[in-house]
Structure formats: structure tokens, C-alpha cells
Length: 189
Image (tube, rainbow, N blue to C red; front, top):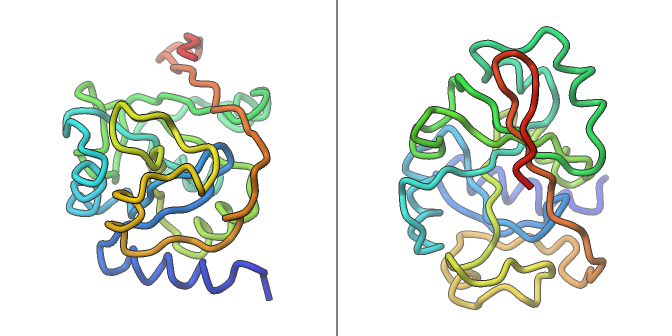
């Protein structure tokens, strides 16, 4: 049995009821919910005191899940993603099957396929994309470690993952690139 099995089961139970949770991602500690549930996405915005017109980042398990949510995926998607170095969030156009309030005004969305055992296990078991936004109040510093999370956030989520709470390994934020229709990219961060 996986060391984080209890956390996986609890996160899935919370998402199935439209709830929110704190979890360690492949970069920093994040707030998560079912990315297909608009009411759950609204709860995240309220927790963060974040403008509702701001888009989110979504985690997906693999390119198979990603292709299901792209109306017009580039033919060499797998090769494109394999060529990225480090954690990379890609902004894609023409998203389908994700809550509208998670998307940017132009219908685009930042998506990352994490290389993290916990995140991958959670995504594969849940079988749907998950919101991944920093576990902070808007405009406050991003929490690299669990102990840096504002208690206002911690007290208002439906579940806090126990896995990696004591981990203090510093991880860089993801690179962010925008994929244009012609397959070229623009570096955002």
C-alpha cells in the first residue's frame, strides 16, 4: 500500500462532494478541487480572496487525459512535452470539459502534467483534472512548505493532506509557456 493512500482516499472523497483541499504539488503547496466543478472552483476563489476572472492552473495525469480536454491538440504533443525541462505549465487554447470559471477570458488554460508520485496517483485514481493554485491568500507569498500556509486557508479547506508536511526541500516554481496555434511557444516565466 502507498504511504499516502489515506490522503488519496480523503482527497477523492472531498472532491466527489465538491470540496477543497491542501496538498503538496510537484512545485509548492497548493489548493485543489475538481477542475470540472464550477462551484468547487468558486470555493477556491473565495478561500484565496481572489478575483473570479483570474484563470487557474490545472494538473492532469498524462497526455491521454490532456488530449481529452484539448479541442485542437498539436499532432506531436507527446514529443513537445518530453522536450520541456523541469516542471512546465503550458497555456493551451480551446479547452473543453473544464469549469468555465477556471479558464482565462480567452478560453485558454495553464496545464501541467506533474512528475510527482502523490499528484500522479491522485490524478489517476480521481480520473479527472485537478485545480492547482498556490495555497495562499491572493497577493501573499506562495507557501513553499506546509508550515508557511496561512492558518486562514488551512482552517477553511475541507481536508489537508498529511503527506510531506515536514518536507522543506526548496523547489522552483514551474516554467510557464504559451503554446500558439502554429506550434511555436512564448515564454511567460
